[in-house]
Image 1 (cartoon, chains in turn red, brown):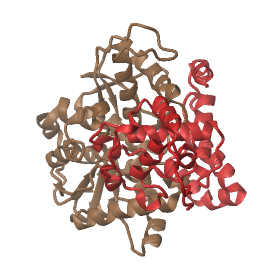
Image 2 (tube, chains in turn orange, purple):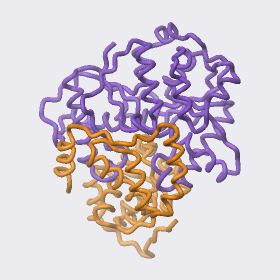
Image 3 (cartoon, one colour):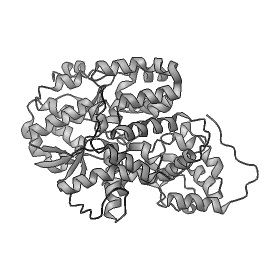
Image 4 (spheres, chains in turn blue, orange):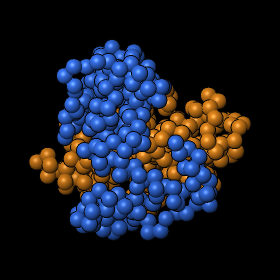
Length: 188
Length: 284
């Protein structure tokens, strides 16, 4: 785990706060640090910046630090924080916005597996219209762990196959072109 | 009763026994599942972690099909349910979504299958089909995150204490244990991307289920089932314990209580085979 670096002297950058508020359509400035998000979060044990502190980072405009944090990838999107926030901030959605920005800007993260997973998932979906699980899993495993990673997962794959949980051929839907068009037209 | 049906990708693969048991239970209860023609993937977590407009457009194109059918839509996967509800809320609020034509009527409801069974089928109809009550089966019901959260999307009455699955299992005759971890997180895709983190989360669920006196965990989500069932050996090694907990879809338990002949085939697909426990209880 990396520990996000906080500069010794913080000069608030309202424009960066505004940027993430606009992108997420969430009023992050409303956070009064009650810590309900952090206390209900099931993954704080693996985070470098716990959720209420991440909100504080964003209020101060420490966007770069937020984008480099492990937290944005460790968040499991369980939506507990968003459900409990007394100021109605959709914190889980703010996490999404940060993940989107980090992926678009190609931010180097120590949690490199998560973006690899999302890209493997979406490329299988884009190709077939539905996700073909074995293809997605093989592409993900190869890109994240190489051949040795693939060897490590081979037992699980074989066990799944024996249980009839692996669909050998993808379901290729008729509307593949429409799905591809959705990907094209929503690309930013 | 006719409903439209969105199975989702995992019911064709990892969660095959969920799809098969949903179909069997529906047949027995007289529910006619009309699968959405040429349905496509909802995008799940990967779409919303990558692009907001993509995350709405992918589920929305399926809602367009459902809208034309005008039948209530049932969804057995918690993630698909969540994404479809997100898109439905957006369309109802008049949002323009890429690839979706104007004129969404929204003259239908979207229900997770567990809520549908309890709210629309109900106690009497379930009880009428029970041939072998699940007497002596001690279980907790695990709903996971997205069936209830966030409530502005799911319209859940109680985000921390849903009861549909508990009620269904009670009608089947099981001994349902209360616990505080009904809607805690299983770690989702972390089981692939950061397994040690997910395993710790799952181990906690096993500990709490055991503390509640449960011998099995009933679930209503393909991701929850797969995460809890597949890696118990590794989770045990990491925690220094010896977990061996059957994780069973509520529809499999319904099928078992209804005397569905296919139940054996479903249970054979599990990593932790539920049949020894069921045999011990005289239920199989």
